Length: 479
View 1: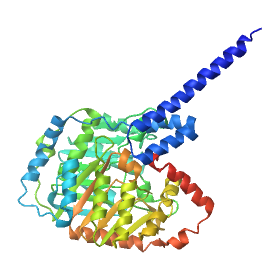
View 2 (view 1 turned 180 degrees about the vertical axis):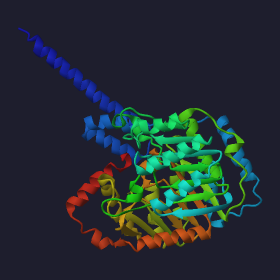
View 3 (view 1 turned 90 degrees about the horizontal axis):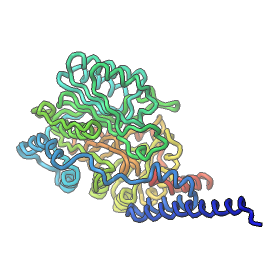
């Protein structure tokens, strides 16, 4: 006699196996046909093969590529760039540093980043000084304030800035705010609603309902931009949160942020207005957002953005070229070091060729997984002659790079896969001896608070530590 229950159970099991393995094989085929970086492709294939359930879930939420989407049409983008381009073309005769002609041209070609001359730069290496300068400039606003941060915390610092923005809105100043929805996931809705009720236009970037369960979590706006009346701008690594002032349990929060005055503010304004179009579908091109700006200094500046949308990885490509072009030295500060193959190779080749390449990382970090992953790459660069330093005074969150007493870059970009491939980022590339020497002094001051890492000692760390690092390294392209 046929046991129909057993037969039905067997048929259901076979059907489930077919669907289950079909989903895994189908997903692997999709990953391969997507023609991504081979390293990232292999990482996904390995996860899907050996951890199929976890792999399917992670790929659905974090792995799907949205790179083919467009933020803005070419015609609208041309309208947005019209005023900055006119200001760029009106410059008398920008003298471009010979060593950086190719880098400047690369950014113009891939990012429409115009090199603006005669800018003044002021650097901040701590949260208090940056906040004080920001509040001072916000109080001076007469026409508009554009503010964009990955994190806008509902704490003493966030509420202080919020109250100033509300006060300026009551004076008739146009105020627009963009915050990242995942970066501010735990911030109460009321915090931003209070600003909206006062006439401030507030938008979240790529709003999500469940940050842990959506592919949009992989595409975050990590930028930190402030533009005031189109003439003063801020950019760098600091968010609006109390910990940037207070520090962490093991020490200070060391970061780098800059104030810009000059035509380079047009670049920051363009970046903000492009993001505003993305979140609001409103194209703002009025001349009041791009006022006539007098000369304020002698620095040549390009404001460069990158995003997961479009064919190029602008900042990563630029850094690869900058490292490869270094003649004497290239110094890097970054909180996380999960480099793409291009960046890793450029650092190794430069060091092997006799360039003084230095990498500064925090001794302790705020993310244990990425910290382990960072350590897995250190032997690779140490063997090539890169000098590695661990910052001991606290958490090093600075994204600062300097080269050959001429090039400096400060912004939101970390040296990791996430910043290079998934996040919306912004960096100011500054060409000028005065700024480079100032940034070099900052780096050397930080170096005095560091312990240098030597290959012989580094290779002696416990085997289980190396094993953990190696496992995390397999996932580095996905972190």
